[in-house]
Length: 278
Image (cartoon, rainbow, N blue to C red; front, top):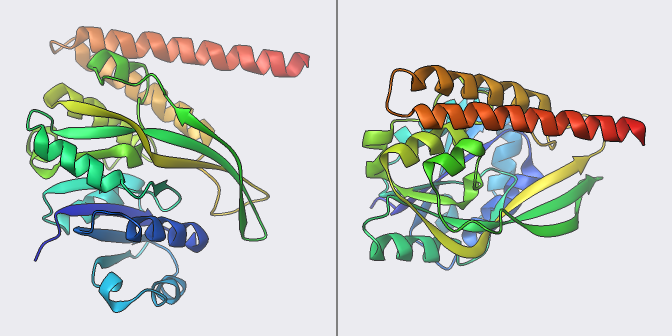
C-alpha cells in the first residue's frame, strides 16, 4: 500500500546528519510515511553502510534513488515526487529534523481544514558546530516567530518559512507545477511564491520543525549552502518576477520583490561597513 505522506530527502555524503534526519522521521508519532531518499551523486557504499543499521521494517519505508552525478537540488526533489503517489508531500533536508508530533499535527490540520492546500509550522533555528564528527548545539531561537498568515506580498519580501516546516497536498501540484530545476538554490522560495498564488496555506503556531545552521571548520560537505550564491539567485528571481509582472495581474508582487531586494542589498552593505569600522 502507498504511504500517505511522502518525505523527500536529498543527500550527498553527509551521513552523520542524514542519520539524525532519518532518526527524526522514525521518532514521529504519525507512522504512515515513506522516505524518498535521493542520493545526489554521493558515495553509494557509505550510504548503504548507514542504512544497514536500520531494521527491515524501517528499510521497507525508505526508497533510495541514486543519481549518477550531483544534480541541482530541485532536480532531485522532482525525482522524489515522480517516484511517489502519496497524498501528502513534505521535504526534509538531510541536515534538518522535526519534533516527534510534526507529521501528526500537520496531517490532522490538513484533514480537518479542507480549505488549506498546505500548512506550515513555526521553526526552531538551531545554530550548531561540527568538530571531529561531533555536533554541538550553540543556540536555539524561533525563526520568524510572528508568522501567523502566509500572504503573497509577505512572501515577496523573502521566504517566510523553512523547507522542512511545509506539508502540502499532492493535488496542489496540478495547479502549482513542479519545482524549478534551473535554480541551484532558493528553489523552495520560488515554489512557495507560485504555491501561494494558486493555493492557500494555513499556519500552525507551534515550533515543530528544526532548521539547523552550522559552523564547520575547513572545507566540508557538512557546510550550509553558499551565501553569495543565494544573493545572486535572489536577485535573479526578483528581476524575473518584476519583468513578468508587466504582463500579468501581479504587478504589485513584482514591484514588492524588487523593492525588498534593494532593501536587503542595502542592509548587507551597511553590515559590511559596520564590520569594517570595527
